[in-house]
Length: 284
Image (tube, rainbow, N blue to C red; front, top):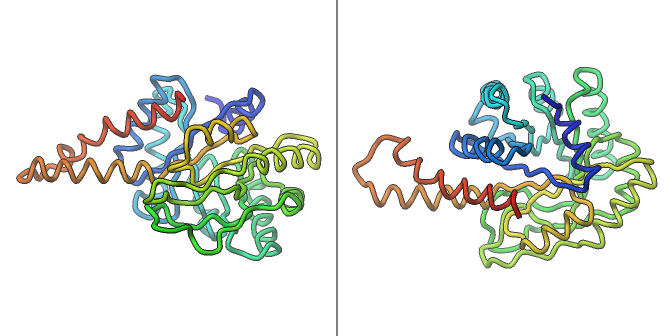
């Protein structure tokens, strides 16, 4: 099966997009694999540090590899990792990609620590993709009442320096996106011109295309998402929308079956809404 690096390279060359969904229990992973198989598309499943602690690092790798053994093009990403030790743990376990999230650090420190991660991965397993972040979009994958404090867009100048000095394979800019989704239903508009400028600046400075990743896409309009893909986004992350759908269906199941104690009977009700959600995102 193709490596994730090759899959992303092909996606970038044709101007397409790969969808990335987080999971912390079997329902989302199982349904996402089903959609990937039915639509014959690659898909990336992500685990944040907290999600990895719950699922298990090696357990997650084993689960994803089991689906790959069935021909499903499914890959595993160590999402939002904030320490070198946790990066090392994911790489050693067999993740396909890692994200060092130094967005909350001063620029110099972010560059230094991201470069350290890149150098380690190049030596240990150069097939693993390393993604870096710049700019601040908050940290919580939750339904939010207000925009996270300190949200700040990425500047083109800093992006060029960051990419050159770190050598990252993919880059996640802050372009109006925020982690989580607004309870009001009104997400900040994505800065499409900024995406275009970052894409062009990286191509000119690096002499090649560096895939851009959109984090915090939960709640963004289909119009904004399509425009972002056209502007140069190659990977899109969704988490909070899935979490909310999962919880709502679980609450419905608990109310509808107050005497039921079998977890699989309570959780199965969420499969259809998750299936429809993931399939709809990929097909639009």
